[in-house]
Image (cartoon, helix red, strand yellow):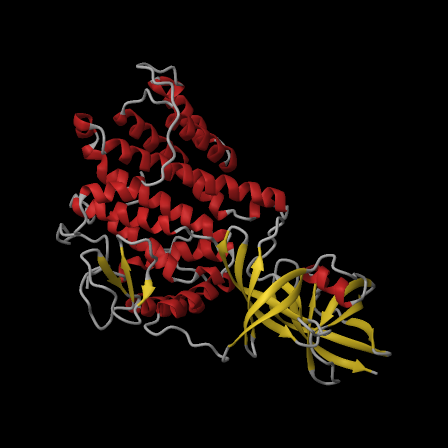
Length: 528
């Protein structure tokens, strides 16, 4: 079985989709472009010398400013009707080339560049997401004009492979930014993505090696398409933005172990119909067989991941041949690899606990500080409480429907306090899965950390500390505590009053970390 994007693949010319149908998919719902309708243009990018200066200026700026500028230029080119098709495409390609490195850096830095500010983080996400969305619209606009261009279409025919490849690359980047905020993903995305791939298949260029961007090596349109399919199939809604970024690089590294095939084989794990508005799906039963149906599996990739994890653990570093875009520690990359191996396994991971379907209300408060205020009695009434609806419950946690509020605080790894409908007890949990199912609605999976959390005010070597005790303390045993990251110090005991007793606990190993907390095991020295 050969890997997508390698030499020696035969041309694929039987996709079964007509050029008209493909063009219709790619250009559906593109907003009409406003323009000046003049035979000549005064647009700065129409002058070769000025265009060169502008592209150089974009390349020299900081990532956020460069991406914002490039987005504005893309918008201005789209609005100027005087550009010929060949000139329009060339400008879009060059703007893309000048900006791609900055746009990737912006993704690597999300949400670090926000510096903890929700406003700055939101601006960063909007900039990154909107740039790729504008680039997708620009390339789709070129394809729309191509279908109506007549003889002028011949002027850009040699650039069609690059146009299809860049469009799929832009769609992949937009898809990643959507995942940074956990969706939602419009079905139209899959139509556009599949349409670009099928257009390349019909033109017999889907498996042609080419340098998509200067200095990045060669790839194929099929390989770029397969990357998006694997990305979706890797359940990245369970990961944080940094982990999603790392996973994307690992997917590119392990892609040669995947292949996109037409044949129905026993080892097939996923299927996708490139002509339908549907994402790739695990193969539970054979779908309707069509010429645009494709299959892929990650069995060989899973084996390669296992070997890579063994090498990383043995060398205590990521091997030099694996480019993750930045340097990351072993403790950061291993959980991502474990997650990918689980998702690429022939059989889907089984739930450790049986889930029971229910429909019940749930009061939710956000973050360690919010939970502590509520459980310590310093916060009363409805302030800071959100109303969610529980879909299912198990020994390990909940599945719930959550409204996406204006401050949009829900993230993987966030701590939440939960009070089931009709009860007066509070539970403590961590968001482990989050998918936006609509603009104002999301599906959340929560792991329960404690069914009996207690808010305590601890003394950490003279430093007052708000902490959550997750287990009942017993002398000589261990108890988990959640506290602010900067309050946890090696060998620094926590002393606090609880139920008219004084407790003294010593920190041991860290169990987990989150945006505003750390959970650690503590040895209970005394409680009397």
